[in-house]
Image (cartoon, rainbow, N blue to C red):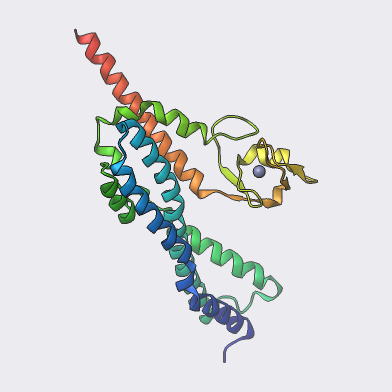
Amino acid sequence: MTSDVARIATSTCDKLLAKKDTFGDQCVAVRAELENFAKTCKKLEVSDAAKKKAFDAMIKAMSGTLETTHAIDAFVRALEKVRNDARRGVFDNSGDAFPDEFRKALDAAVESYGEADIDDEPPLKKLRETAGFEKADDADEDVVLDDTHDQGEAALTCPLSTGLLVQPVKARPCGHVYSTASAKAFFKGQGKKCAVFGCDKMLKWSDFVKDKASEIALREARKRRERTQRSQAEEIDDEDDE
Ligand SMILES: [Zn+2]
């Protein structure tokens, strides 16, 4: 005989799983849009640096979409796992703690799915081809983007600390991104106005959620910077040899 707890957990998962095909609707539309952009990017009659800049902006947007696709996959797998656990009676003895344990099990399953690897995502590879760019890692000649990466990182700074984002969190009401430590300290207690110039949203710490897209963009920016530093160091080496 199935326990009430197992039945509730199972049917909740099943109801959500039944809707899984609708999870990605937005993703598909955004991707189609980005693909058009990649085509336009290739045709632009501007410098390679300018194209690269436009493309980098697109990659940033794309990272968000990929993250969403990845997040959907992770969520679907997690639902299936938790449903199967429930059927096996894992939650039967949890009593009042059931909602909490159910949520924790779901979180843990999502977490264990791991992070998206942008470089290896097929849609991103295809976009790079469409736009006429190589995968950044194997293009040593891409020092052209030198002047664009600073701006990329400037967009990844915390409006409070003004330093690069650390553990980025996003304010749900307005979408502005902060470092966890700054936002936590500044927005604790009663609501305060968003620190971004021109944004009037009142925010509380509870309005913030982890921002995976910025985390990925930070990682990409760091990789770009390291690559530039490496190639600059090589140039200096070459000069020393002469
Ligand atoms: Zn804001």
